[in-house]
Each structure stands twice: as C-alpha cells, then as structure tokens.
Image 1: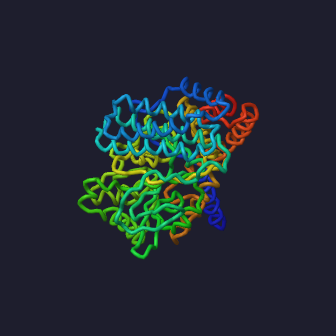
Image 2 (image 1 turned 60 degrees about the vertical axis):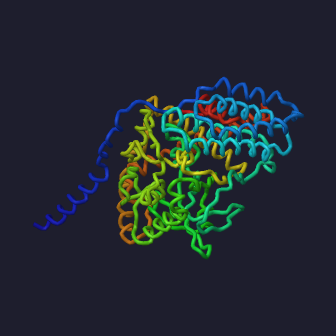
Length: 478
C-alpha cells in the first residue's frame, strides 16, 4: 500500500517522458496544384551584361545624354498596354545603361532617376491593365528587374556614392503626416520591409514571384503629428510601435507605399487611408491579436503582417492584393506547410508593391544592407532549389523534449501577456525547424561571403546577384 503513491508518481513521470519524446503528428501535405512560379530564363542576357560591365574601362562620354533620352522615353510609356514591345525594349536599355554606368562618378543618383521614371510609368499603366498572367509578369519584370539593375550598379560603386534614400514619386495625400528621415509619411501609408533574419529571406523569396520584402506595417498619424506603426510579429502578434522603434528593429530595406489619389475609392473619400489606419490602431489597442501562422487572410481573428493591412482596407471597400500570392512549386509548398501554413493563395509582403492601387513613394537601403540582402537571398534561393529536389525542412528530434518544455513555459507566459521562447501559435516542431533554418542559413552564408570575397579579389568587383546564386549553387550548398 505504501508503494502506491510512488508508483503513481513513477507512472506520471513516465507519462511525461513519453509525451516529451512522442513523435510529432505529421502535418497535412500541401494541396497539389500546377506550378505557376515565374522563371526569368535570361541567364545569357545577364552574362552579357556582366561582360559588358567588365569591358567598360571608363565612363562613356554619352552616358548622361543616353540616360536623359531613356528617361523621356520611359515617361511616355504610361498609356502603353502590357503587350507593347517598348516595355521590354526600355527595360533592356535600362540594363545596358546600368552596365555602362559603373565607372561614372555620380552614377547612382543619375541612374535612379531613370529607373524611377520606369517605375512611375509602369505603376500608372498597370491601373488600366487586366489581371491576366501576362500583365502580372510584365509588371513584375519591370519593377523587379529594374530594381535588380539599380542594385547591381549601386553595389559596384563605393559605399559613399550609393544613395541610401530613393524618392520615387511625390503622391498627394490629405491625411495627417510627419517627416521622417527625409520622407513625408502620411497616415494610412504602408511600410513594406525586409528583416535581417533567415526566415525573412525565406518569406521574401518563398513566392511564385520571388521578391525583396518580408513584412508589412500600417502607419497611423494623429492630427498633432504623433505617429504609430501597427504590425504583426511572429513572436507576439499584432503590436504598436513608434516610428523610432520600428526603424531601430533590424531592416535591410524599407519601401513606402501610398494609395493613389485617382483611385475611385480615394476620389469618394480622400481620408480613407487614415480611417483604415485608425481602425487598425483601435483594434490593436482593444484586443490581443495572435499571429496567424496559417496565413488565412479571410479570418481576421488572428492576423499575419499582410493581413493587418488588407483587413482594414477591405472593410472600407479597397481590396489590396487583387492578385493573390501563391506558393505552387512542390518544394516550396512543402516547406511552407512544414512551417504551419495551410492557405497557399494568400497575401505575401513582396507582392504588395505590384498592386495598381498603390504608388511607390520612396525606398530606404544602404550599401551594406543591400549586400546582406543579396547574400541572404542567394542562400535561400539555393535551399529552395534543393527543397524542390526533395530536401526536407529539417529539425533536431533530440531537441524535441526541450522544445516542448519551452513551449509549455511559453504558454504560461502568454497567459500573463508576456512573450516566451516559443511564439504563441507556433508548435515546438515548427520552432525547431525555424532554428534549423537559421543555423543552416548561417553556415551557408559564411561560406558564400568567403566565396564572394574571393570572387571580388579575382574580378576587381563584387559578384552580381546571379553570380552570387551560382557561387551558392556550385560551392556552398551541402
């Protein structure tokens, strides 16, 4: 009889041990769907551009006149339909201008003026385009391709000659505003950014149309100029930050997007963005909003970062992301499912800049963060190639008991409104997968940085992005 309490304790301990080491339930496989991912298939063009840059020993005498002529040509394209061949011709001319500008003093600001003309025309034209795949691919090529050309040039320049702020378009707004780091930011503006963590690179590149951004936030500005940034964090759900706190959190780039004043909803009510921002702020103050790992934008009870923006604009009749983001390739979809995603047609931060309802106001980045961004992306691109070949999103099974204990501890902290080591809504296995991704990415990143340094010593310039990808593919992958 005296042994029964000890026996019960022993059984309880055994039960806990079994639970800690119990294999996780398999996650549901992603739905089978045709691969709709975009492939540029222009390796030969990029190689020719790199050779053209290497062959340019001095700044061409006509570089300024060429730039001015191209800018005027691009500015005339805003009425053109997506199938107009002048879009492709203009982008090719922009690529060649970038390749020829690398030896020119002041090339950075001059080239950005030309590139911005393309952005403004493409965004204005896209308002009249249909939602066909052709229109989407043309706009993607113009915006993503011209950014890639600009960054390839900026990274070849000395850091002191690479602008950290690019003012793209002056977009009128009547909502309250404040000046921050050289940009007039209005209430309702959307800040689209790229974080410095490997998971940020995964979010940016993990898309049928790989992009440069991993996070979306909404800005609210009071009439007195007091500002708040409303955003959803994986660690703590929807939160409110000051602009200073927002920008102090590590970011490799930030893009400012604003509703176009000629949008029908804006003509009816120019204060609409401020009302959307006010609704987001009020809800964030009124209740705890957990992070939505499933990426279900149709259910706003839990919200991921894009959902914070889309939900409150949708409530006022504006549909952001008119074309949904997709993750259709088998390897990418499998990894997304392994991270807890259940909705494979959703809102992705990188796709927001292609929304015709939004104009590009400005972008911040600097020389060091651009290179960091490119290295992170190259590593993730190769890891996603390997995922397509069957590589798993791995984790250490031996660490599962400890992760489950950490999850239980986090659950207790969450009940008191605090943040634990395992985010609310994230399973122990997903937490371990995130740790594995970070560790594997760090290992490969260190190797790629060393390879990039050797490349620069040999060629007298840092590698372009496609060359970084080749270095990662040929010498850094496991």
